[in-house]
Length: 35
Image (tube, rainbow, N blue to C red; front, side, top):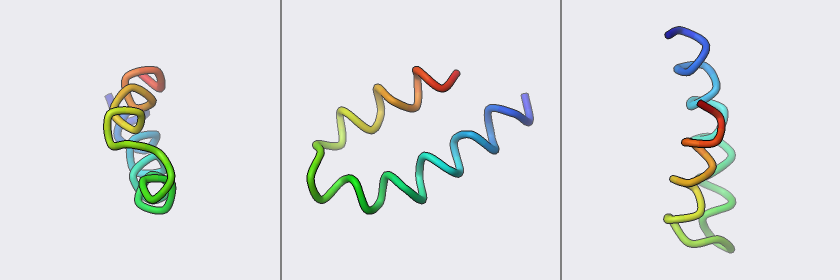
């Protein structure tokens, strides 16, 4: 599942910034959506 790994990396890099405004739970939900 290489596509999932790449998508997750993008979410993590953006999530680290978004986390300041959005709770971690939202980031996790978004990662699952990417899958």
